[in-house]
Image (cartoon, rainbow, N blue to C red; front, top):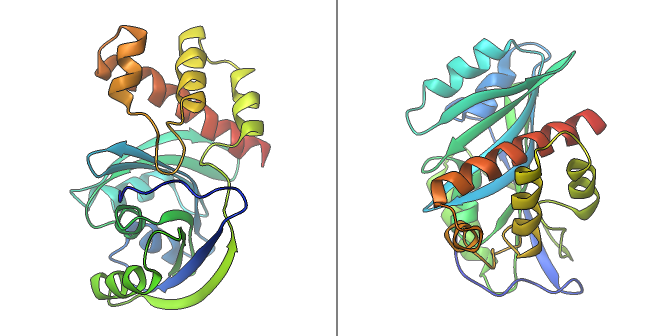
Length: 231
């Protein structure tokens, strides 16, 4: 992701939104079934161009969703939790994902959804980035993309909001998961761009990065599942 100073709460950003029509995008393909829909709940940078995307998917069997994802070698997919009429999935993605492309361009993806075989991707572009460059690069990379919205608005909220974080810390996380997630949030790990790396946080805890990621990933999955249950 491009490096820039995070916008202040009173700063303006440019929100851009694209329509996507190609079934080459897994989140679009899963929505082609009658009544199916997908909605991005959280978008979390993992480092080195890798991101975790948590999608709520309804109207389609989980096995079909996983089959669509596994057809793309750059996607690592797993079912996090199944609810009465929808399911929560985690997709670890890198190159080839529209949201990742925007994230690596310096924008913050905040709307990714699909239904009826078409998709929408929206992102906030900070003042430090050239909006025209972001838009042109995106439409060049994805020929099926059409710019639908471009407007100035106030800077959005961090990836994990305070209310959702507090709710998660009061649920069934382990003490270590609560400690790791709280430290990551307080240190700016979820700010845009992040103010600390997972490796730096792991050093503070005196554990290896792989162990830190394991605790953090488990906590994130519980947090996102909680937010979906409370929606």
